[in-house]
Image (cartoon, rainbow, N blue to C red; front, side):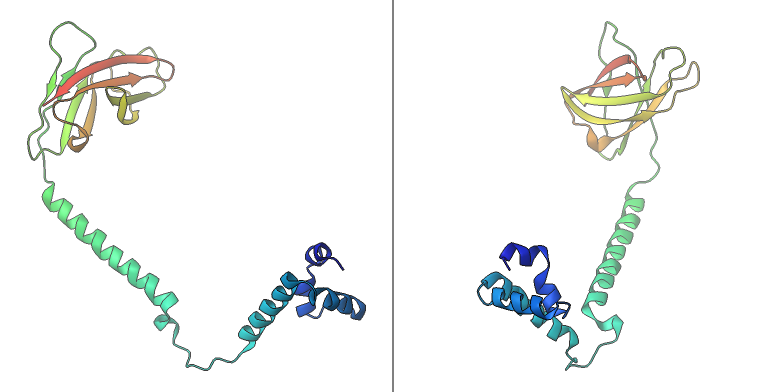
Length: 198
């Protein structure tokens, strides 16, 4: 028997499970005495079988005291406490906030609108005056700072004559930077709107 034949025929496993005929067993024994890899497979397999059938010498703990059960449950409980605390803390720190939308219009001559962020302000509201093409399927917005995309997402089509309102997290906007808000329909860019943040 060659080493490859022993591997392909799973000889080590079959030998340990006593699933070989007597001539086959003699042939494999002759091989594994000369093959350190197969001898190691047989030795490790024998040790695993002995450990699996050995009677436990220590007292078996109830399942709730076993580390493999207790540790994940303790970690889950600790995580639940931390998330609960953070949820309560964030509710207390973010209260009602008045919205003062900044109107963005398509590229026109004149000054670029400025979005001013107060020290404790959490959100910025943008009102976009857009002229969507007829029957757009969906709108998608992308907020860019230079060539870097900051935020993007889908937006519902506003009612006729109404602006598209976007509520943006103030933490995502950098003071002193200029941004471009690009609105897409399914097939084309509807408009690009620039604004500064102070």
